[in-house]
Structure formats: structure tokens, C-alpha cells
Amino acid sequence: MQELLHQHLKKFADVKDVEFNELIKFFELLKMKKKEILLAEGQLCRRNFFVLKGCLRMFFIKENGMEQTTQFAIENWWMTDNLAFLQQQSSSFAIQAIEQSEVLSISFEAQEEMLSQFPQMERYFRKVYEKSFAAAQLRIRYINDFSREQLYHHFALLQPAFLQRIPQYMLASYLGFTPEYLSEIKKKHFGK
Amino acid sequence: MQELLHQHLKKFADVKDVEFNELIKFFELLKMKKKEILLAEGQLCRRNFFVLKGCLRMFFIKENGMEQTTQFAIENWWMTDNLAFLQQQSSSFAIQAIEQSEVLSISFEAQEEMLSQFPQMERYFRKVYEKSFAAAQLRIRYINDFSREQLYHHFALLQPAFLQRIPQYMLASYLGFTPEYLSEIKKKHFGK
Image (cartoon, rainbow over all chains, first blue to last red):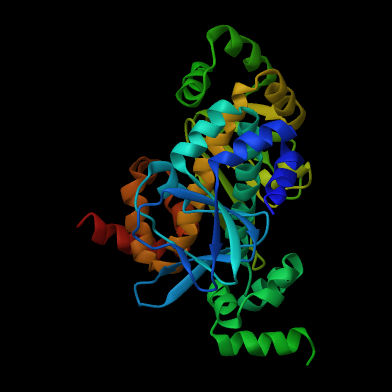
């Protein structure tokens, strides 16, 4: 199962088998039940997560008490509250498994140590964060430009795998819809 | 003036003077007049920009024909359309100097070459993108949670230097206000 991380590292950086066998020791394998909380809002954010199997979501509680989902992560995706992780402070978000999941978890100290022992991991994380930031930049464009219905179609086009896996009310929260409105749009979209 | 980049590199990575003298050769110095366009929307995004002096903004034209500003960059900040730069494709954004500015510009090919010749730059860019992504993650939270007035106060708190430098109508566009509404909020904020 950890082989998934190895493959992902190799896509972006030169990591030999013998090196992977060393650097995997910095990680801890977590098995999460559906709905289990990995990180609570307000809790010290000590760890970064890589999804081997399953699906995570990131959310926060809005001033009006509603949950707002802001990100999903499936296999091969990293997830943490990056600012809180960098500054080792309390998190502005919660992270929850929305399926039974397996996750590699690494502490801030272990990640720093891994980066100093394996400098090729700088290249790997440079590419991971570069792509993440690029996606966030575009997302801010879409939020500013698209109608809610266009946001749905765009999401369906770019992330079809998510549509099947994510519960409707969470997808609605991510897109800023009511579940009823999402259901109407889906009917239109699939012509049912 | 290029010394500003050197100082910024040293904050995040180990770059010696003799190395800086080599890697600065990958950059080109651009002097921009106020309102000059560095990158047009739809143009092939070949270059990444580091601000030595002045201020840039990133914007796009909305479906309704209005300009929407999505980012600003002052001294020590990098700016490009990151996805278009990575994929060497046409840009979804335009970049404009909003003051007389001096900018270091580097092409995609030169940046790749610099990274392979100076691996410590991987660490530098890993940290730059990590922080950029962390800020974008929080920004998506604020967009989803804050009223427009709260967004203004938050911006004023975190980025006071920008308030003095950025024309009112651009700040209004960034925050999703009309210029009139921004003017009302500013009067309240400064108690005038």
C-alpha cells in the first residue's frame, strides 16, 4: 500500500528503492474509519497527511454554525492546514475521513528531518506545492467568475471521480449550494 | 537592486555570494511604467516575475466584461499564472504594473536550468510555494466565511502597506466591492 507514495515520489523526483525504504520510516500508517476526525479545528496542527486509500475532506465551522467544506483529498493527495502546520499552531480547519481510509502521517519535525537527509524531497515538495498553489490560483478565478451552476459543471468535468464518491450534502457545501439545489442541477446535468 | 533577491534567497536557502552571481544571470531586469502590461490574458505564459520595486496586480476579464483583480505583488513577491507557466500554455490572467516597477523576469527553461544547476533553489521555491499555497487555503476560508466588510478589515490588518499604495477601484475589485461601498467602509474604519 505504501508503494503508492513511492510511485508518487518517483513521478516528481529521483528517489531510489533503498532511499524510499529509509524515508518511509518517517511516516506512520493510520487506518481511519468513515467519519473519523484526523484533525480538529483549533487543535495544534502537528501532522501532514498523504492518502493511500479512501477520501478526506477539510472543513471549518462558519460563523452561522454551518460546516463549510473547502477541499477534498483522494489517493495520492496531500492534506493539512498548511499555515498551521508550518507555524506549528492551532488549525483553522478540521480534517475528516469520509470513507474508510488509509493515510500516511508525518510530523513537522520528521518532515524537516526527512528534507535534510533526502534533499531530493525538496524537489518533490516544490512540485507538489507549486501545483497546489497553481490550482488554488485558478480556483479563486472560478469562484469570482462562475455561476454556481457553472462551478458544478466545471467540477464534474475536472473531477469526475469525486462525483461518485462524495456524499451529496458535502459536495453541496463545497460548492456553496443547498443540497436541494445541487440535486436539481444534477438532474439537468445528467438529463434525468 | 538585485540584492533584494539575494537577501530573499538567503532567508529560505543556503545561497553563497559566488552562487548568486551565477544564478542572477538566468534573470532579465525589466523596468515597467505604471499601467504597463507584463502578461496579457490569453498570451503564452513564458515567464515568472520577482518584484524588486513597485507593485503588480493580477486580473482577468469577467464574463460580464468587468476586470476582476485576484492578487497583488509588492517587493519580494513572486507572480505569474502558475498553471500556465508550468504547462507553458496561454494565461488565464493578465499581469500589470500599477506603479513604476522593476522586476526580475525568468523564463520557464531558465528556471528549470537554474534548479538543476543550483539544487538549493529547490528548497527556496519549495518554501515560497508552500507559503503561497498556505495563504491561498486560508483565503478560500475567508471568502466563504467573512462578510465583505470583514474582508476589508482583515485585509487592512494583514496588509496595511497595500492600503496606501493600491488605487481604490482596484482594491474594491479585489474585495468584490463597488468603489462607492469601499469608500463608505473606509470612512467607518478610519472614523472619518
